Image (cartoon, rainbow, N blue to C red; front, side):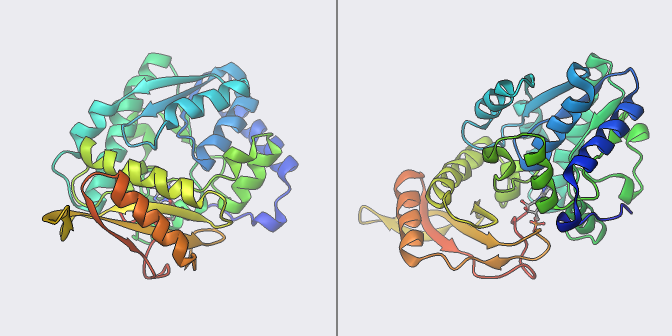
Length: 320
Ligand code: XMP
């Protein structure tokens, strides 16, 4: 198990130069590839990998159809302005096909893992000639996977899976000793803008982690709209993370004087340092009311908005 480096003890300069050296040594004269989702960890690993390998790192933004509003375009623009080229890869059909009919949370995560690493990356690796995949796994991902809480989509070795055998390429994980607070420090040291390294976390399985029941393009569209509203209204808050979840069950509501058996959205907002435990943020009631009002007005079919008031544990940050 990787030895933890606590954020308070982290010497970012030393960390960056050590990791740059390690990545160069492992990749040699070859090519590495990685996927950027725009989340904090994958952004930091992209910047680190680019510092180590320059244009021998091929970075893809894989559009899995599960990203937030405008995410693919925005992420591409930010990284281009940093001189890091990103290639967009449209894999929406593959992911929705793999998710069709699945309602169990762990099966959903497994479908995403297989589609991402075997199908999409399998093909990209062969096409690019890369032997290594660089990825931003952090210590919290491993803890939760090993403890059997959630199968984080990016953890293999600790589960006895050899990526070389399973997928045909090696995985390099330079952030494995850090937690989110340490990753943010490294992001700042690498010159990433605060809009990237100080972003709220976003999970690897993306919006699929926030859809209970089957993940279909239509249901993702609903949670995406609700997410955009929650993110806009809470963006100035000094909190760890906020999100919207689409529930599987419908509830009886009324609209225009008629019965409307509609959808439920749950809002969550968390205070946390490293995501291992989290407290519910005591949001002002007016803020909650404003968000609920906007969601029922702007997101078609929603008749109920609730706020989660249970800390982690026993809750977890995401719903799936
Ligand atoms: P949970 O829901 O387990 O989330 O309390 C803890 C933190 O991790 C994020 N998260 C993930 N990140 N791959 C990731 O890279 C995943 O599969 C994954 N699942 C959850 C979550 O957003 C929270 O910040």
